[in-house]
Image (cartoon, rainbow, N blue to C red; front, side, top):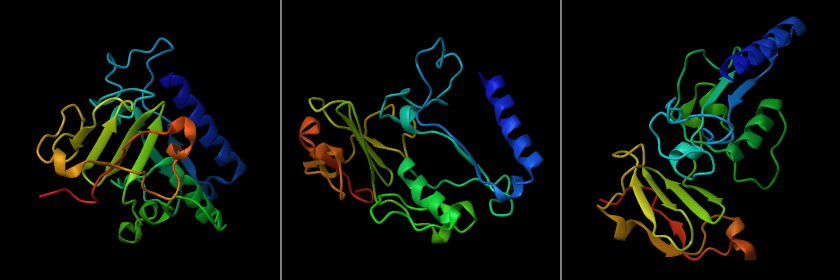
Length: 209
């Protein structure tokens, strides 16, 4: 699969060169989820998650943290690396800004153009990011990540600065950091009846002392 993917990406880049549009085309490489567990793959053998917990469909880091590689000649400096935290809802405003079009009036996404073009100080950031999948929940706020596998399970709290793999539960300030309340944010699928999840998570924007 890796060989086929490498060949396919090479075909795309070569075609862009042949068409004379390579220098005016943004190429984005990413994935919609972490490594899979089906289809004859062996993610454990190949260490596909890089030591992170969880696979595809999981709300742990291994299931939702994915690569993002951008080729934009003249705008993205080759070889640069950024630690900006983003989500897929950031792609719409990002691509709209690249195309010179206004983003939709209502979106939770933030354009990533500043950090891509070498201006991280001008990059807006999310106060928090929230996910739901099949009744599970995850919320990221600064160094803190909370996960609840389903509504009947306990909340798992991780200090990412001390436990980037999210394999151990943080005990230090759990009672003061995680509390049960209504969903935060303008829109959330939990408001729909079939997704009524009791006690949606909220974390502070910075760690408790």
